[in-house]
Length: 240
Image (cartoon, rainbow, N blue to C red; front, side):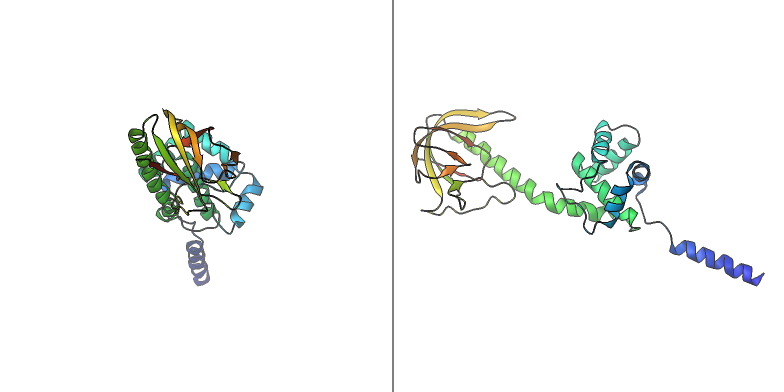
């Protein structure tokens, strides 16, 4: 009888030590779906991954399109998942999918899920991009309102190692114009385009500081028309 009681205690202790990793209740149905729907190779690959996927380059798995589709349709249990993630400030479908897979990776490896930590990783990536994007939008609005058709402006563009003028994208848009290295052009504004999908000036080039430089890998000369984006790291300077 004594031996039986000791065995019972041992089994209880063993079960306690082997408890499942913590999963937020709102994700239980999603993880059960992944258990049933993911192919064995993807589950094994994901479980053995040393690193997680980070925005916007999350792990690419066969089930990705299926999850994205279900999140977009927003019905059944996926509506619960959407509401839960929306309440935590996760609104993009790609980020929702990525976080689900990252947390499922923890689940496969019996690691407790700390969704706040997962979201902080995502936020630390997007936050500087969103801040930079807001600054660029503000500058684009200012330029559109204050630069008029037939105005002459100077445009300064960074040059790469191939004598090609490039643009920079958020969050890394800060650069300093270097005379005799970067490109400066003068243009006359001919048309202002500002729609939901297109925001730029059509302009005629009247001067180039380096006639051998290309702009975004295209050749231009004085007299040519060029599209000047409003949302850009190029420096648009009205001529007084």
